[in-house]
Length: 442
Image (tube, rainbow, N blue to C red; front, side, top):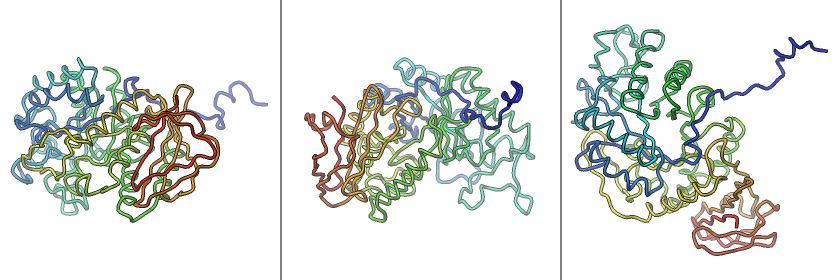
């Protein structure tokens, strides 16, 4: 029999994996990415601020500002350069405005009940960053002893930092603290987060939490980042699976792999960011229309009704159908569009139905077996307050679908048609190619 002392150190006792506390305000949140340069004709924070009421009406809760700092000139790409080539972490790119404009943008968002996070580039700097002269020892070197861009990529406008240096870690942490304290940011999106040591991010989270609760998004796909640093990571493999299905290169089994791993390998508190496009996909791999074709609406519905926090990249709601220039000025053409209407309706559904909330607040997706398993995805998300049954046809074939087991049984309102319906063991649904039905419990 173990003594009390032995029990307190019992190696068989389960311990919580996630030690951070997610801020309460993210529980039903959606996220919107602003590329300040392209977002308005002026390309400024002041001009972008005028769009905040529209974004609030769309159902946006978190605004992610792409990097706001001065851009390096040495080895710059294009005329204006990449915002991910940071020259000075304490600066504001005059192309966008000044720090007072940043503060006013954030204050306006806060007044509307929205939150703002800043895109942070910890992995590398511009070639002509002030740190190159002040601390050349903080940089990685190649086999010749020269500064080195991130290996195997064409990121020729940046050079990598070396987190083996205590001074660099302190400098970078202090810079992030500065933007939360000075400007009022509510957290960060961390560029290529997995290329920076996890223990650095863990400490950053602790330091930021001393100021206020923050939200942290990692551009990476790793369980380890959720333990003590990040609330949300990218669902890159979700995008890959849905894209391959839409292009006819795979069936639903590839998506089942993602959901299986997400449910079993990632902690319940983790949130995955689901999306059909972002600045990388749009600039380098095609528009949302090119990447998803006729499956686009079904993919968007799944990104909101399925597990994860949905992202809109600016211009999606206007039906943007072209790749925005990345190193030049390229204004978005704003207009009313059915894609915007779809997102607005879906975001409203997400907020009203707690089963669709994020992370630990939401309900687990449970697969409902059906008669067209490789083409039609059907699942339930249910808690004691709400229930959603979704059926999505990810094929170019019409399907008459029947379902097994009793999880989906009940009386519902079909959300998009607003029709009352009862679903039983004898129910068959006809789903058109790339069609979808979302039923909510009555």
